[in-house]
Every structure is written in structure tokens, then in C-alpha cells.
Length: 229
Image 1 (spheres, rainbow, N blue to C red):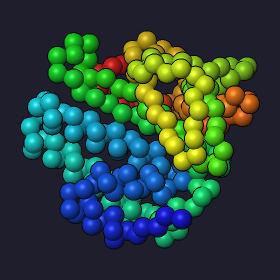
Image 2 (cartoon, one colour):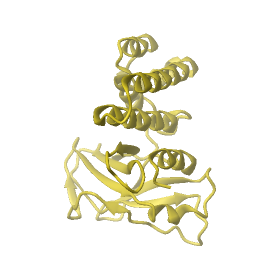
Image 3 (cartoon, rainbow, N blue to C red):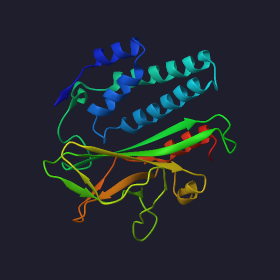
Image 4 (tube, rainbow, N blue to C red):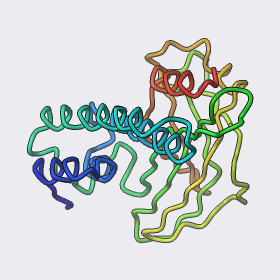
């Protein structure tokens, strides 16, 4: 089990290392925790602000204000957490004991990008938690709850080309990234903002595993901020 405490996380924030506090929270919190997706959203906003600073799209004072807002939001979340939240158990994920699948929404500012202010991505990481080697098929996206009779599986714009199935050894993590294009958002226009998207991954033997969920209201907020919608 991995342990930490509130004071150590507050120390990271006080030292200007909020990004490390965010990463630690995502490691120790179960993906079904009420604030897990909110932490992921803040992580995406932090990365967007970092990119803006590096690209010179905003001055340090404006970015500093945004960093402070995110840091204060993390501090508020810490005040709501119980002591048991600071212990990572072996079965704290909603996926299974075999695969840990994490879905993260990120944004990237790009100077001179004419159709909006930046780009947004779904980043998927898949970690083999079993002692056996696993051959995994291509990840697909599903909408929860579905409005269709059967649950369709969607492909989005793939940034990296990978050949599937991919063999994943014990303890190893496979990562891939999908760009969210304007036409991609048409797929979920009929869904309410409270609906979610998640990733489905199957082994070559047909075992199916799922990632954490991200609500469309969170996705649409980031897309609007990046000028994609």
C-alpha cells in the first residue's frame, strides 16, 4: 500500500509543487472517488496554463493567478478528504486486478493555430497489474449511459499509430493519445452533460476492462476554453 498524509501534500503546494500534489492524489485516490475526475480536470487546466506560459501566450502574473486558483482548489479538496483516502490499496480502482486503465483529458496551446486557440487530447494509459503477460486489443471509447439499444464503441483521431494486439508485460504501462477534433464532438451532442465517456480495452481472449469516467460537462468546459467547440 502507498501512504501519504495531508501535511505532506500541503507542503508540496506551499513549495510551489502543486503539480506533484496532483500526481500524488491521482495515485492514491480510487478512481471511483467523488473528487477523482475533478482532480484530473485541474491537472488538465494546470498543463494548459503551463503551455501558455512556455509559449508566451499570457504573462506570468496572469498564469500565476491561475496557478493559485488551482492550488486553492486542491487545498479545498484536501480539507474534504478523510484519513482513509490517503492510503492506496491494491483494489482501489474500478477497473479490475489485471489492468489499470486511466483516461486523462489534456489541452495544449499552440501559437498560430488558426482554428481556435489550441488542441485537446484524450490520453490513455494501460498498466498490467497481473503477473502474466497480456495481449491487449485497440482501446475504444464508449458513452455512459448509452442512448442506443446496444453500446457502440468509437474510435477517435489517433496521434500515434500502434499495431494491435500489443503485448503488455507485468508492471509495464502502455500509453497512447487521441486528438479531439471539432467533428469528434458531434458524437456526443445528443448526450446530457451529466453523461460520461470512458475507455474499453479487451484482451485477445475477450476479457474487457474499463477506465475511469470523465463527464461531458468537464470535457466541454476544456474544449470551450481551448476554442475547439
